[in-house]
Length: 228
Image (cartoon, rainbow, N blue to C red; front, top):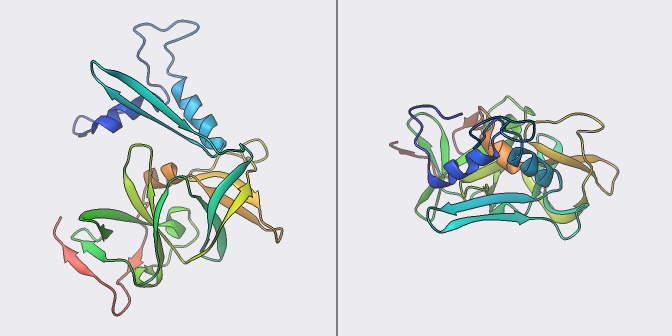
């Protein structure tokens, strides 16, 4: 679960408790020690559109915070468009939105794109590429960016084609009728009868190859090279 060269922050160490297979028990019994517990808690809470986070300070104690929608069947979300698909980004993890031309985008020496915001470099995730909707490069100068934050406080910016509206949606689970999908928490049915997938922002941040392909910014957009 942890490579020898991994440099884990305190929040990353706390989140190990949510990893499947991780156990603090000295011995395995019929009831405990099998590494199945907190990962189930997180999965169930996320399936309801909620979040769970943990903070621990040696010698003082541990706090576990659970956030759930007021109505478990209803989620507040931002409706976005990606590669002719309609998706829902939960507002629970949403911190800020930037329209095309508002973002200060930079290119790292390895080709990855980042957003410069409040003296912080935030990685940009091409949402269409991360979910497999597109393989062609996109021009970030024409994309809207949604700043999201995961349970450990890490920030990323989702690049989408357009932001449509904010609305409440009724959550429909996928696992019982279909299967679990990486990066997707659930689905909903819009007023026009179309199905829209609800994004699991924590999983999208962790997806491999999440940066996706990106062309240089459009004329007039910022595209400075930043040394890593």
